[in-house]
Length: 117
Length: 146
Image 1 (cartoon, chains in turn cyan, yellow):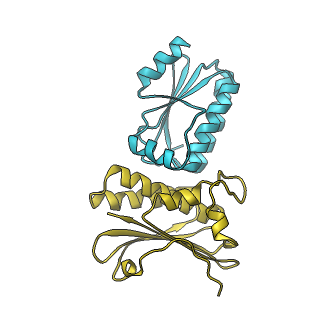
Image 2 (cartoon, rainbow over the protein chains, first blue to last red; image 1 turned 30 degrees about the vertical axis):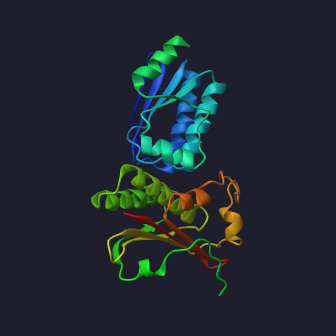
Image 3 (spheres, rainbow over the protein chains, first blue to last red; image 1 turned 90 degrees about the vertical axis):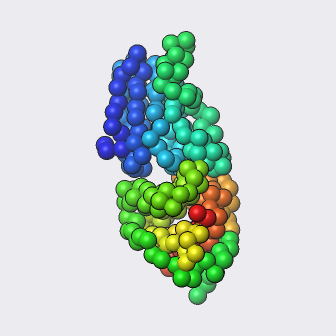
């Protein structure tokens, strides 16, 4: 998958970097693959680094929200980190608040929150 | 020919325009290419990050619609004669939209989606117009001030 360069297990959290050229097909594949890994590998959290993403539209937003819902059912939390301010403004204009996800400004903050859980 | 439209684009803006790019819309990879091309043209002309993100998001929504609902099509990107606006025209030869006003309604979906894409794309554009003829296809014209 060219749109996802790396998935690393860091302190029982899956750290996923999503690249700007991620396609709809790839993000759906990612959702599927992460769901399986959460269940199999005793993962406490998924941290999605979207700092490379110039846009998050309704499709990608919905897949992220669904992933958060799925991971919660599998006893893991999904964090979105590195969202650009312009992306946040646009998502709110689209009525997408991603309430299913937890947000953190950086990977460090997300890991700190996971350690406290 | 039945014509259903929604929104208004100043006709003067479509005169003397320059074609910057024309691209096919067939796969999800093409959606990425289209919105990245629009973002690049806007960046080259000094548009702000927020303006680029808002409009590129609108282009992404509309391009995906052309593929998912319209069975594919193409997208053309123009610069207006006074270098003030970027115009994007996205067309498909799909089944068309029976009721454009209904399709634009927040929360309305023909199936599967959130029903936020079309209305959202209009909000994120400075000019937005849909021409759709049932059985023939849909043309969405969008513009953004540079």
